Image 1 (cartoon, one colour):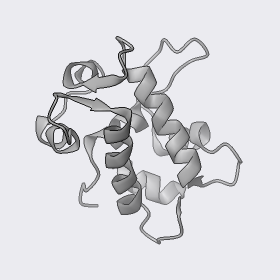
Image 2: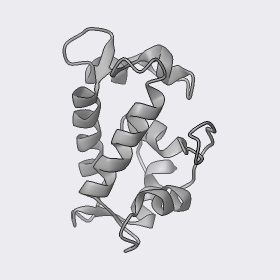
Image 3: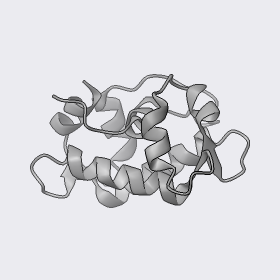
Length: 129
């Protein structure tokens, strides 16, 4: 599949927190589904997606200032600065939770190939690959 999602979604798929929020590990599609699917229907709906992405934002915001910088993100994954700059709508070199979630909303729409408002395991696999 052509990589059409922003790097932010890839980061979201790669971050898993233990009960203490200290460990970072690469997550595959099945693990992403398991941690994000709160109602156990084997799909991630928009609400579940939004909740998980919000958790990821606050986990990645290591200095707890309410913004993500490219430096905070690069601790987790080396990224191309161009998508970051595109998501940084006010040009202040950081992403507010609003800017971050706005970019991820577009990623959800792109990943939802069958346009049913949810992401299933196959759609997640295509995103990860």
